[in-house]
Length: 327
Picture 1 (tube, rainbow, N blue to C red):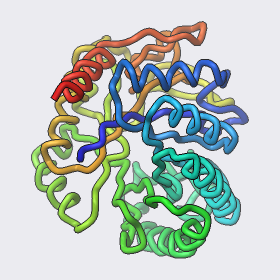
Picture 2: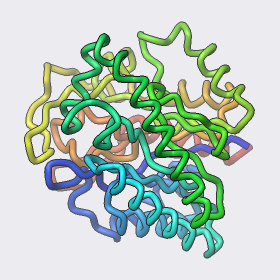
Picture 3: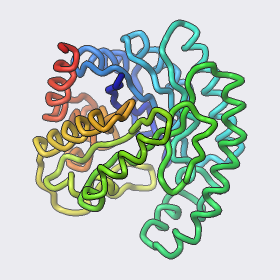
């Protein structure tokens, strides 16, 4: 059975703040009902770096009738801090699972990039600079893969002592994850754009054909004209030291219909390609309100006052979900 889902950010920690401010449980509860009742999603991937928020949002998602993919998504922790966070999350996810909720636990997300000590760099900014230097990146990958393997080899058995449901990890390709200890293979690199479109069918077939369920835990594109051609790249926006958006990096034209076509087309191809679960990225980018929505992958447009309004992608996904439900 194909699981149709969406990402929901409870707050990625950066610059002394998070990407979901203010965090209002009543708003989160409403969002979960919208995801279930209007988008007709089967599941939601709950991510973030504040443990109490993750647990609260996961509970609200389960109450709305959604399968929960519980995903710690931390930033600038060291390995010991990350391990403690992941194991704490496993205990919280198990408490939710024991209430009768359907829960999948992800033992972190893209840890090589966002955790100190896997890739060279004192912080995320320095680590991201590697992606612009292919020579340095190639040299850094073997050590990063070894460190990720060491961490996950220790983490997965410890997670299983605390959590009795399915276990996975939200990976990126550079990590070269050994999937033997996991129940589900999962990748945050579900993007298709001009750089990989020709090879995408073969890449997807290889991913699906590894002998375990495969989940595309992140895919989508921004809301500007041509965003689908660069879907796998970072958002065209600069941030200040407080983690807040400062300026768009170039002049952009709005194209909500293009975003909608990209998401639904790729979602249909993932479903047809044998993917077990696919999670659109994302419901809302609350750190990109107002004019910055052009650089947002959210399917709702966050307004300057913090409220949101549906974009074309929202309506397209609602139609997709409704059609699935009617079968």
